[in-house]
Every structure is written in structure tokens, then in C-alpha cells.
Amino acid sequence: MELPSPSSLDVCSAIAWLAVMLGICVAVSVLLKKAGSTLSSWLLGSRNFGPVVTGLAISATWMSGWACLGLMGITYAFGWSGIWLAGVWTLIGIIPCAVVVGPKLRGMSEKLGASTVSELVGKLYDSRLVGAVASVVYTLLMLVYSVGQYKAAATAWHVVTGSPWTLSIVMSAVIMIAYMIMGGYRGTQWTLSIQAVLMVFACYLLAYMALAMVGGPLNLNEALAAQDPKLVMVLRPDLPPNNQYAADLIGLTASLGLFVTMAIGFPHNVARLLGMRRLTRRDLAIMTLTVVVASSIPWANLITGLAARALFGTAVLGTPARADAAAPYVALLAGPAVSGLYMAAVFAASLSTLAGMVLVMAGSITNDLLRTLKPNMSERRTLIVAKALTALFALIPLLWVVSQPPPLLAYLMAGAATGLGCIFIFTLATTLYWRGAHKYGAIACMVYGLAMTVLGGYYVYTLGQWGWGYWWWATFIGCAVTYVGFSVLGRRLERGRGGNAVLAPVSAGLSV
Image 1 (cartoon, one colour):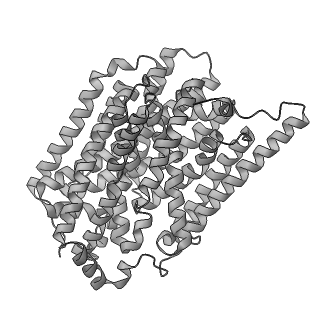
Image 2: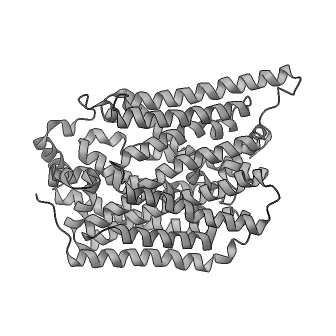
Image 3: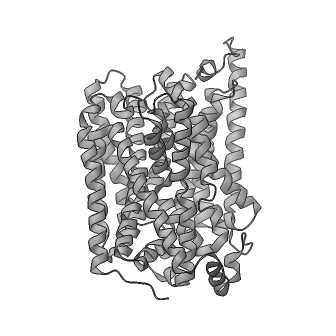
């Protein structure tokens, strides 16, 4: 089947849906603009969000442009073997974060008076240096991940409307900056919830229509097998090292580990949980159900990617966006109402994750780095700086996309996710359960994880010499070894200096 072309109705639908979505986000933030008069309230609200809003917000930041566009490109390119990186593990990652670790971290942040995730990391070790290093590492890796959000929105806009994407992306970025500056944490939490509802409806609808267009599950597999029998294989040993996640058991298990670790390692996920109220068992059950429904989007989206391959063959690979354009072409085939809705959903997914990350970056640098260097800075000035950094961190990845758009979306985002997940599964989550944690271990883990992320980006994606799965496992195991090893070393050095080496980190003495 030939690739469909956008019509004037597709353009009008896209503009209308995007205008409605962005208009609602701005209206919500205008209503809440007085809620963030201090840096602490602007960064964290008043810790009173309930289970539904919290569940929708964490699902929105978890999904991102990867889940609503990039992962379809993976299953389109590789068939069923692409599901391992395309979100089949999604709930295995996000549910433990939301239900088990999240409430503990929320209790910790309240008891320790931490307003940001990196400040929480520092206070868990009773070390401002650890918090400052965490702030820098978070910022560097999130800037890379943020680029993918703009790329996803740009791809969806260009395919659905056939027009240049620059104006729509710049306009959306400006509006996002405005509603974040006005509404702070509270405004962002509410807009994330609204965006999550839009994503859920659009992605489930598109998957249903895509499956219907290919004639159901049996016809889907028959069409894939007719193109290439390898497309219906669950693992493909013929793939090169950078696609190891779809090639063998090492890559498969690494993809599982990626989703488990990055759910907790993503600070924009954890930050959504810090602002919730203390949840009852009933509240926890409601939030779990909300997360299950909203965060199962990848299961629908990977079907959309497979259906795109069945419908269009390899034609999408010849477009400028290559495999990332698979789902937008399916949306065009479904008609103007669906194409506009889906395009707005990709923007919602991209902006929600981006907004969560930008708020974390701006807050971390202001609260955990600048305040460490200038502890006497006034509350008013720190709030002004935080808002200025919000605009800066929203614009840096935008300039990156405009000047040099990255290749296949999932590659870029999986690289940043590897670093965030492998580092902070130890420095943040493990600290809750291990009394032997030490600040030396936390710093060593962050340095090693950041170095391996950079090396992996070069040797896995640029040179294609390292296997993707081996890289992830080397990063994960190395982070574990450095975290434990340097923690033990730090305890022994304290003992040698006559310090109280048996004291656990601050977290171990808190009941949550």
C-alpha cells in the first residue's frame, strides 16, 4: 500500500486538537499561578495530590515521545522481536516505582525536608556534595532524553500536516514554558493528568483501528510473514550488535532490566510521587489501577507499529523520519479526526515528559547546586533563577533538534535511560534498604554510570562495536560494584579515623 498524504482536513484537525490541548494546559496553570509563591511550593506544591491525579501524572511522564511514537518505529523495523525494547515490560517497571518505592521516597522527602529529587539523594547521605553531583548527572542525562521529546512531536506534526514542524514545536515550547513558570509543580501535575487522558484515548483508539485495517491478529501475522518470516520471530540472531535487545537472551534480559531501573531512575517519575498525600490502602489500590490502565499504552502502540509494517511494507523507511514515521502514517490512513487526535497525543506525551524533566532540572540546579554555592541567596531571587532556568532547559534541546535532529528515537532515549536507571536504582532506591550505603559509593556510582553512558553512546550507536545488551549489563553491574565497593571503603576509612562507622545513612533511621 502506498503511503497516504495529508489533506487539508488533516491539517485543520491537527491544529484544532493541538490548540485545545495547549489551551487547557494554559488555563489550568493560570488558575494555579498563585500556588507557587516560594521556591519550595513552586517545586513541590503542598503534597496533597490524590491517587488518580498522581497515577495519571506519573503515567504521563513515564510514556514520553518514545512510548507514543518511537516504540512503534522499533516494532515496524524489526517485527515482533522489537517488542522487548518497545514497552512490553512497561508495567513491570512502573508499578514497583509507583506502589512500593514511591511512597517510601515521598515519606523520606517530607521528613528530610527535600524539595527536589537530587536534594533527597543528598540528604539520604547527609551530604551536600552528593546532592550537587546528583543534580549535575540528572541534568546532563535528562538534556539528552529531552531531545527525543521534541523529535517525536516534530515527526508527528510533519507527517500528519505535511508542513514544516519548526513553528509548531517552537510555539508549543513557549506555551509549555509559560504554564510551567506560572503553575509550577501544581500546575504541571494537573496538566500532566489531562495530557495522560488524551494519550490513553488516542493510542488505544489508533491501535484498534490499525488492527482492524489489517484484518485482525491472524491477518497481521500472515502479512508480516509474507514480507519476511523474520518479522514474526521473537528473537533475531541476524541483527547487528546495536540491536541486541531484539537478537538474543542477553539483550532481552537487558531490556527488562532497563525498564525496571529507569522507572525509579527517572527523576521526573519520582518527582510526581513526592507531591502526593499520604495514601491509604484504598488510595494505593486506586492509584495502581490508574497506572495500569494509563501505562499500558505501549502494549497498544507496539501493535500499531506492527500493523504499519503489514500495511506499508518497507515504504516508511524511505521517508525522512524513517521508521519513526510509522504510526503517523497509520493515523493518516485512519482519517482526519484520528490523525489530529493522535498528533495532539504525541505532543501531549512529549510535552508531559519534557515538562517533568525541565522542572526537575531547573529545580535541581537552583536548589541543590546554586544554593550550595550561594547559601545566602534570597527566596525571591532563587525563585526568579529557577523560572529563568526553566526557559533555558526547555530551549537547549529545542536548538539541538533544530540544528541536528537525532536518528531513530528509541536509540537516543534508551542510551540516556540506561545511565539514569543504572545509577539511581542504587544511589536512590537501594539506600532505602541497605544500611551500609555511604556517600563515597554514591559518588563513585554516579561517575562510573555517566562514563559508561557516554562510552556506550559511542561504541554501541556510533561505531556499532559493542552489543547493546552487554553495554547495559556492564553499566548495571559496574554501578553495583562501585556503589557497594566504595561504600565499604568509605565505612572503613571512617572507622580508621575514629568516626562512627557503624551509623547507617540518614534513610535507615526513618520510618515511612
